[in-house]
Length: 175
Image (cartoon, rainbow, N blue to C red; front, side, top):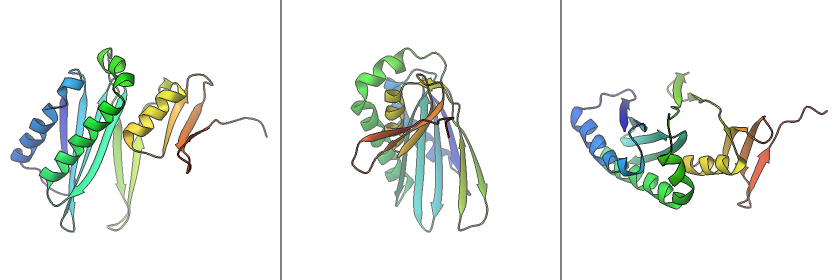
């Protein structure tokens, strides 16, 4: 798995990079060599934050944790991603093993001032079923997920309703 370690407003020491690589090696058994991992570290007001995003076979796995130190945050992130994989093992098994080219999510950030950070995420829309979009949303830990609906041929959004069920928004050209 290809690893990229990024420090936001901080330098990341080689020992920390080596520790991250060693811990993420444990996840290699789930991914082929085409997997990409991006680890972002930041520290604000004494709290260490870590975000781990893994892209493999067009599927994203993501975990973001705050802790007293990066080692603890890393352990939690790896546990969460392992739990996501195990929870969705049957759905993911075929997809992860038959992947040819993974798609990498491109992140770009803009800052307005110290108090407010605006984050823009860009990612390629690929055709997928509603079930696959729900799986992606759950793996990312988000309340909604935008995707190209392979049945409708339109950009659609799945979301988690307050009652725990799922909803889908499909655009209509009718007035």
